[in-house]
Amino acid sequence: MAQSASVTQAIGGYIFGILQACIRFVFRLIYGQKGESVPPITDAILLESATSLARKIRSQELSSVQVLESFIRRIKEVNPILNCVVDERYDQALKEAAEADALVKSGQYSAEELAKQKPFLGVPITTKDCISVKGMLHTAGLFERRDVRAARDADAIALMRKAGAIPIALTNVSEVCMWWESNNTVHGRTRNAYDTNRIVGGSSGGEGCIQSAAASACGLGSDIGGSIRMPAFFNGIFGHKPSKLVVSNVGQFPAPFSAEQNSFLGLGPMSRFAEDLRPMLKIMAGEKAALLNLDEIVDLTKMKFFYQESDGGGRLVSAVDPDLREAMNRVAQHLREKFGNQKVERIQLPHFRQSAAIWFANMRDDSGHGFAYQLGNLNHDINTYLELFKWFFGASKHTFIGLSTAIMDSAQCKHGSPKYDHLVRKRNELRAELQSLLGDNGVLIYPTHPTVAPYHNEPITRPINFAYTGIVNVLGFPATAVPLGKLGSEGLPLGVQIIANFNQDRLCLAVAEELERAFGGWAKPEVRL
Image (cartoon, rainbow, N blue to C red):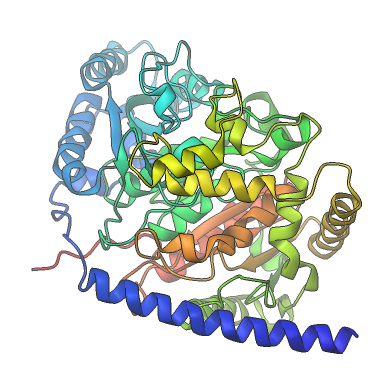
């Protein structure tokens, strides 16, 4: 019986693979060559990490006003092409920058004191249009919220402001932040800086895009199914989903329906440079930063490195691209050469094959609400079938994928059902297996996604591919998306994600820094003549 099921699954996987190849061929015919390129980066300030900029502002090598003006110019240069920014506060931000410069010049604090009390003083930051910034839009890509403005800062934004950072712009998301392409009926579609015919991911896609185009020093994203890590991967930057319940989710819309869903959601840092993640996370975590021991030096020579090349053949999940398999093997080879063969082990955990089913089941709760309720602005369930009918005639204010996701969500197992209980047990088994495997000195290197950035709308044909990231959310572990420098054969970023045990975020970040040194990290988008 088991053998028969295995054969059936293998045949199904083969047919799915052929179908995916045919669909990709059609999309290549539709889009043809690469799209419009972004202007080259000519301002050296844009090539500095946020940490470096903060240091130079404190030492008066640069002024905060000078830094903000550079990034504002870059946003105005790239946004007509990429559509990543949906709201801005340039005038207010420049006033705050002048105040930061005045504080530095006053001599009230030494550079060392400022580094401790306001480590990001004068540094411009951005965040996505679902994390509240007082006075700015707070739509989450939902047409019903198109005029909503935030009455207060999200907790994480407030902490970054307290540390001296200056919000300058808000970036695009998918509708209600529940899809992995950033497109909605309020602000439209965001395009990838490496190829404008490709997606930027979601829901922190606008944030990943603005970082990759060097139009923001660093930013904040949120992640309940990969919404930091997929955009970070597709846009060739670093992004970290923290351990569960370490960073406050207050100020995120839509808010989780239950305490358990709240543990799956994580606000985290995004940047082109690995060195920015640790200090940002330390600030965003507030008092809970003590749980992470982020100041503790990580000795990589004492670590264990496990890697898994794929999920093992998840149902309706794309095969891992050859470029990404090769990249994973380059990472493993580097770690073997530097830390010894005995430190690096290839594994294959079979539970990963059920990642999508486990994620969908564990996202169920006893509130009775689903995605249709989120599309109703957390006030009511929309009639998804009626809205889908209206969509075909251009009369719906929702996206096709938003409506399709709501219908797919309603078809999943119910909270408390036998299938739900079975898949919760599967999650717990995988969590226990990984906890035992990783301990307090191990990481798992795993694909962030099975393919490089797809063409616009192509995710509709492969919707379950998010499972590579989503599984980590319901497990509650920290994970860091790491770009690997050299672009792949399609001229798009390659990368991996680094997963560690609960509250071992510093291990993820230390490995990210090591891989950045080895492979180069973020690569500037190519200018095509």
